[in-house]
Image (tube, rainbow, N blue to C red; front, top):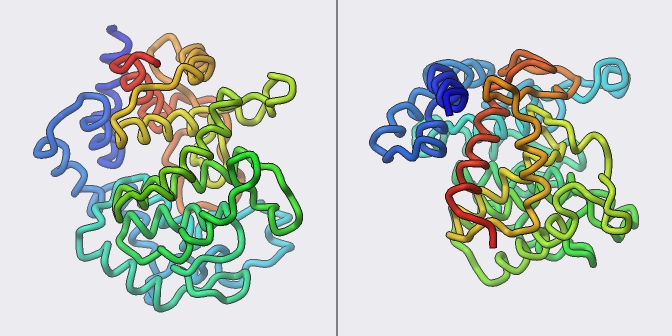
Length: 325
């Protein structure tokens, strides 16, 4: 208990992006207590730093998915970059920039007017070809108030026979991937929460959730063994990557939204999460994706992480408040 209290105090004494979510999701404070802290994201800390990187055209690094002028050679030398508009929007959503502010509306308008996807010059809020990218675009667009209904309709028709999604579908894949499925599920969840739910959306989310639950969030259905060592490593920022903590945090958010209790099939993943807790009550990050970033919001691989600790504690708070069914 003492270590948990110390970890929560560490989170509260942090960037507004962390502090407001700690107050809401772990301490259970009322909106009038956490909302003023959320409003600080625009003017203080990581949120303000990232907003300051916007160009005169309202974009980040001059591009939608890639920075302007970024080449294949640079990708091979540096790794995938994370500084263009798509990932900046996802970061701001994770920080909790209040979408109702003037800057939130300005982001939607200027990105819609000026950003085109690198894939085939598609308008940003109409999406491009890959399910991973489109899932995140739906999540970001729904959060900030853009019309992403066209992308949603496309995603609903792109489920694999086993219930999830895969960015390799266009190349002939007929099996879902953990990575693509979590990106799409998060997008559909945000869309339902901000634009209204429907039977079709619920059915799609249930099928994607079943894909993950049947595998206990990390196992191969065929052997019961971990699908990969990578998804058992806590990754932050998540970018397009799936890991078990990201999966658990999705089910927490979905459970809060729907008022449902944890599924019993989450138990192995919850046990894994508890096993990763450090003696001081915090969690560390195992992987920071390689590549250009505007700045880092964690101390690095192997170090105690406020993001990992926030997500882990709110998952466990939800799981312990609502016993599994």
